[in-house]
Figure 1 (tube, rainbow, N blue to C red):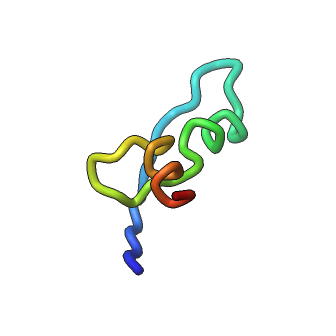
Figure 2 (figure 1 turned 90 degrees about the horizontal axis):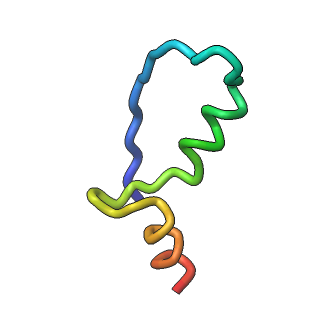
Length: 45
């Protein structure tokens, strides 16, 4: 099991919410260089 922690800061654009941030970052993929969607497909296999 690999655990990676990152602290990310930024400013939300007008009209954006914390939910928009979560939608953009989940599901998290911990495979270096692998797109998040493909990482989930590999895990599913």
